[in-house]
Structure formats: C-alpha cells, structure tokens
Length: 465
Ligand SMILES: Cc1cc2nc3c(=O)[nH]c(=O)nc-3n(C[C@H](O)[C@H](O)[C@H](O)COP(=O)(O)OP(=O)(O)OC[C@H]3O[C@@H](n4cnc5c(N)ncnc54)[C@H](O)[C@@H]3O)c2cc1C
Image 1 (spheres, rainbow, N blue to C red):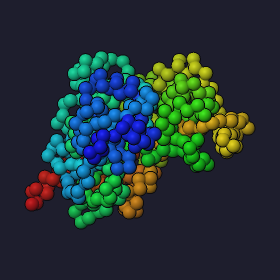
Image 2: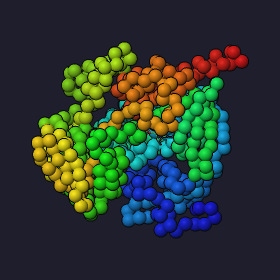
Image 3: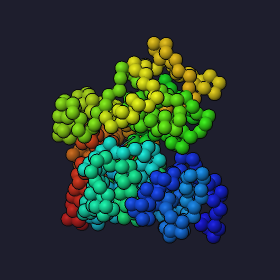
Image 4: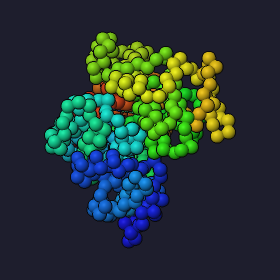
C-alpha cells in the first residue's frame, strides 16, 4: 500500500529502477530457507521490500508487482527521520557494518546503522557459490551465538561442500531481520567533528537530517571503489562489473561482449553472460588465467603469506605492505570454474593490453597494443577495486586530517584513524588487519577490536563522570 491506495502491479513496477529487480527463482530459494525474508532499498522516496504479499512490515503492508519472471514489492518509506544522538553510528549495512552495529548494540551502546542493508549482495554479486567456505562466512556478532553453522543446523542445510549464494543470503537476511531496528536506509553525505564526537549529515527523501554520535565506524565496502582503467570513460555500454544489472544481459541488442580482467568476478560475469547466449571474449593482460582456491591455495608461498598476513601486515613498511597485499589480492579464479570455462565458447584473449576503446555507431572498438581489434556491443570491466579515502565523498572535510598511506587510513590496532572516534572496517582496514579484512571473515578480525576500544572509552567516561 502506498498511503491509502493499493497500487496496481503496473504502477508498482514503474516505481522501481531496473537495478533492484530479482528473479522469483532466487527469491523462492530464499523463501524455502527462511520463511519471512525481506530486503530493503530506497528509490525516490519509496522504500522497497522483498517479501510476501500481505506481510506487515515497518511502514505498511507488502504489495506485489510482477514483471515477466521478476517479482517486485513496495511499501511506503519509513516515517521522516528525526535528529538523534547515539553512542555509535555505523556507516554501511553490509555484513561488516551489520556485525559491528549488532555487537555494539548487544553491549548496551545506543547504535544506529545507516546504509542499504546487504545491498552489495542483493544487487551487485552474481548468484554463484561463495568463494569463502562456511567456516569463514559467518558475520561475527558479540553476545550472539546464532552464526552461519547454527543457521544451517536450524534450516537442516548440509554445511558440507561449497556455500551456496542463496544460503548465505538467507543467513545474512536472518541477521538483518534480528537487528533491523538498528538500521535506517539512508545515505551519509557529510561527517563533521565536534568537541566530543561527530555530526553525521544524511539525506533522506524527506530532506536532510543530522545525527550525532560519540564514535563513527566507516564500513562502506567496495562499491564506491570500482576501478576502471584511466583511459576509459564509463558509459552505458562500458561499465564496471559491479554496476551491471544481470538482467541487462537478457537484452537482445547486446550480443558481443568483452569482459576485461582475469579475476573471479570477471570470469563469473563472463560465464553468466555466455549462459545468457552472448558471444563473450575475456581480455586479460597475462598470457593465461590463473586458477586458485583462496582457502586451499596449494601454492606454498601464497599459503604461507596468507596465513601470516594478519600478523605481518601492521609491521611492514608502506611499499612492502603494498607489495604483499597486491600479491595476495591478485585476480585468480576458483578451480571449480575451470571446466565450465574450458567447456564453454568463451574466448580467452591473453596478452591483450588495451591500447584504445572507441565508439563507432552503436558499437565499440577495443584495440590491443599488438593491433588486435574487437568489435563489441558492450565492454564490462571486471578490473577490481581501488580503495582510496578520496572516493568517500562524506569524508571531504576531513581528508587533510586523516593520516593515510597509499590512499588508505593509517589505523591503530583498534582500527581507529588518526582522528579519535573515527574507525574504519572492512576493506578500509586492510593495511592494518591484512587482506582478509575485506571478506566476511573480516568482521571476526575487526569487530572485537573496535568494540573493546569503544567500551573502554565508555568505561573511562563513566569513571570520569
Ligand atoms: C564479486 C565478489 C564476490 C565476493 N565473494 C565473496 C565471498 O564469497 N566471500 C567473502 O567473504 N567475501 C566476498 N566478497 C567480498 C565482499 O565485498 C565482502 O564479503 C562483504 O560484502 C564486505 O562487507 P562490507 O560490509 O564491508 O561491505 P558491503 O557489503 O559492500 O556493504 C557496504 C554498505 O555500505 C553502504 N554505504 C556505502 N556508502 C554509503 C554512504 N555514503 N552512506 C551510507 N551507507 C553507505 C551500502 O549501502 C552498504 O550497506 C566478494 C566481493 C565481490 C566483488
């Protein structure tokens, strides 16, 4: 329902931007596991939820719209936000932000989590089995023993083998359902330091609002950091893999696609496009793809360095740290995809160093330094992410104050930046915690340290007070 009006499915459809559509099959897999899931997203003042028709959710009752095999739901947006003070404000509602916010709340710290809950997983990651095994895919929450193993046990899901995307998503949704009261689907625009804390400026469909907090944790993930090589200007037909709606691949006008990059997301994307009947070329700088299971790498040096990364990273000099991280993060593909790739018609074009990319008519010409040339309808860059503080627009007033190294914040062992009370988690903490900080298991590596420091501060304040 929107206000008092029941919206017809066609009208509901028009409320949705194309990047928030999901297929029924995926949703029904999720339904089977948890009985009442929903996901939220905000478009033009309407908060969107994915759930069951008639579900009573904050703000209204779910209604449904159908578009082919896609299933869409909408309810009115939350009530207008009120300025509010809290102990901890977490920017980001992905696995890491949710875990940190839930942990501080479980320790009686008044907490707000801002962001689109699990948006990266709902909207940007293709539904492939996870790279991380079940043992490394739990969201760490202090004083909460309901982890992924417990979830699987409860849902009678066999935890052996690869972790299915729908199982992880359903688990993450179950975490969200339990802590949804902490979350507001709002975007942070600015952060200001005060004498004893922070002012957080947020834009909502109802206008601007400012929250205040003693501590702020930045857990905004990878999405603002999509890396497209400098000489290429993004456009509709040239995009980063994370910005492509997988349903776009069903468009008949897109036939010939080049995927640039030899890492997991590039190859997952290429396979998905090939399965949608596209003519797919994968363009890589190296001579061939490198297959590696990140958790059982087989490669001795990689295995040893990965094992020691958490202990070594904080102590290495800047350049050595960069070398170690780029070695550990080098794009590789899960061995389980090898047969699928080799048995497909996907063309792997090795030693292809891009010299130019230009449009001719409605098509794109991609040229290599060695003069090879591809004529395409779309070029997708699976070229990873490049995390820098500058890309977080809400930090613009603080950039000169946050001490940094290679574009990333210098952090204490508690993941606190050079500005007291400003913490970084997830990818942003990589130069302190090691390369695993960017994965779901990063929540286990980071949350206890941040929580301990915030609780210590509260203790000191109480004693002083
Ligand atoms: C293709 C791909 C596959 C992956 N597979 C795995 C895997 O199998 N296992 C694994 O462990 N990891 C995997 N990862 C890594 C994955 O990014 C992390 O596991 C996880 O999503 C990181 O969680 P996060 O909370 O740091 O960030 P995200 O999940 O990206 O969440 C970021 C949050 O920040 C919010 N946000 C951003 N900007 C603002 C703002 N200005 N104001 C308010 N909110 C904001 C967003 O709305 C969102 O809620 C994969 C990554 C990619 C790209």
